[in-house]
Length: 70
Image (tube, rainbow, N blue to C red; front, side):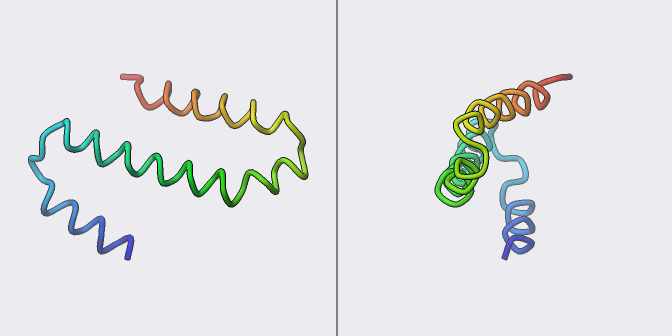
């Protein structure tokens, strides 16, 4: 399904506005964060304690910063 979605996105969103692409990417990012917090974070807190939250936020900020380097 992921490959099909990527293929369809490639063909149907070619030439789409930057605003539309940003909207789609923000929706995808929220979906990933939702999956992370509902599935993986409870186990991570059990194993690593509250420090896990701080490391997660720092990781996302670092990822964001690196994605905006030119």
